[in-house]
Image 1 (cartoon, rainbow, N blue to C red):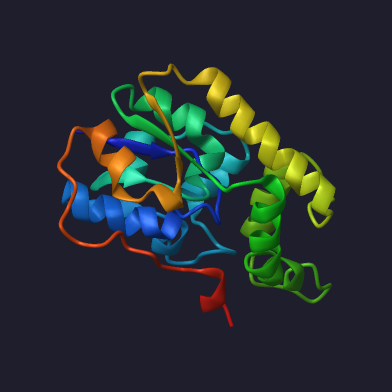
Image 2: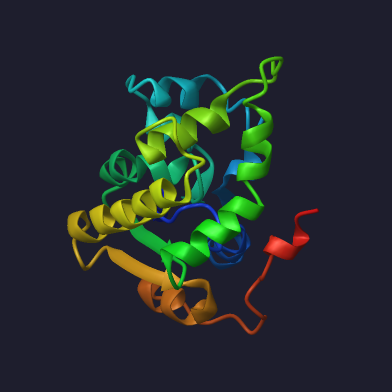
Length: 200
């Protein structure tokens, strides 16, 4: 059947909340970094091949899922959306690149920095994702990351046909998502999870 939603939004743009929201709305599993057993440093053979720009059977990779959000999906949004031409492409955003960077800096960059240690031996998939996103090994530079955030979002906006694209801020909750999917708004609160304060 294929994916009904392809998340093009970057981590720390409400992707964990999206996971639970889509599972509730669509009645199936939503792929997210947290659903990968070895995350964030070991993503498995398929994603490792994707990061090397090798051909991937996206249908097989997402078999059993109704939606896919967060990294690594959003780094391959173009290929995945082409493989699922009827899927909604969801670009989730923060209010600004600076706000996004502060959230990333306080959360996912912390374990990434640990992986830079000379004696690190637990895999480097998160570093590969960051380097691919930033276009450089200098991903720990705020200006580099904010520019990459703006560049990524601009590319999605300019590439996805308007009828397929929903740009969404987590503060908007259920409404825009449900309208885009032609589904009724649930009678339950939107699932706010994985806030920055949840990271120890």
